[in-house]
Amino acid sequence: MERIGEAMKRVINAPTLAARYDELRNEVLANEKVQQFIEDHANEIDKQVVEKSLNKLYEFISASHQCDKCPNLEGCINVMKGFEPKLTLNQGLIDVTYTRCPKKERDDEKRAVNKMLNSLYMPKDVMKAQLIDVDTYYDSSRLDIVDKASEFITQYVETGVLPEKGLYIHGKFGTGKSFILGALANELANRQIRTVVVYLPEFLREIKQSIQDNSLNEKIDFVKKASVLMIDDIGAESMTAWARDEVLGTILQYRMADQLPTFFTSNFTLSELEHHLTFSQRGEKEPIKAARIMERIKIMSDPMLLSGKNRRNPGKD
Image (cartoon, rainbow, N blue to C red; front, side, top):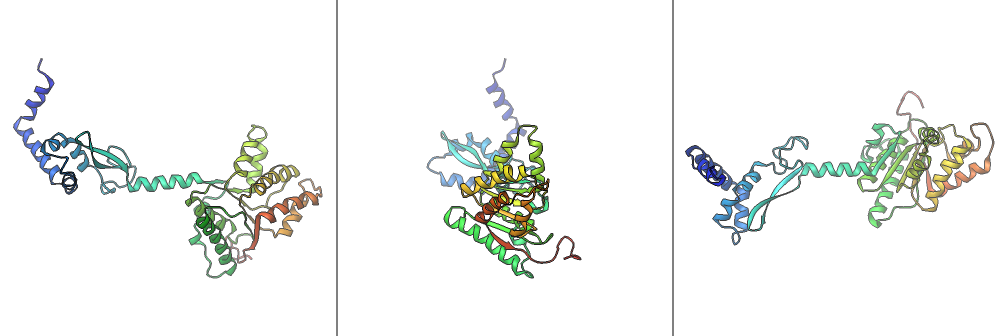
């Protein structure tokens, strides 16, 4: 039986294949990046090294560089999807290593941001908001809130420590409170700060169901331990005494004790919210327990009014 090495030599020596081999060799050596690499390593690379490394050099020039041959990450043509080749020396021969391409880097950054941002029952359009998109031209209160949110971010960037106090943003229905909350959440997530945004009425309904599947403590822990917590639409729920004291009270107590920043939005002023929390779903009047919740909210956040017209229904105030 003919040995494999001899068979390869015989095939390579065939005139048509030999011509093709020379063509590919010339194509490889004409590549500017290959020429530059050989020049940069002239003391380590000779003709024999180049000949032995032609397959790796061809792999290199055939690949996409800086995503120039790839329409998107899914359509990447490289051996390792999302990674572009770089020439290196390995045990005296030219080799190829792979590093993340620009599209892969952007995709990884996006995934990292998504991991930092968890929203529970929040509208998708709200969770796509950016502070730059908040219209502040016609409304000074909106500008004041955006400035406060920006100060919060700036303080973290400058010190590396999250400020202890968040905001209690209150105003009429439809003025854009949730949108601002979502915009701030995205800004924080972009800075790798784990942020949880919760639509409170739906969260409390979910919590009731969690008693049956034994996931109650897990869900409360997930919310209360977030680096930044944003509670949307507090006061819109019909709250039981248990939800107020054992769920909301537990979350706020933990965060106040650990000095974790918390943001709120509500249609109620602080005094209106206290009145709302005073009466349980059964109509029981418990002012002391309501005052305990309000004390925590006041310690943890600065109240700010968001005025303006109803942006969901401009025909109504």
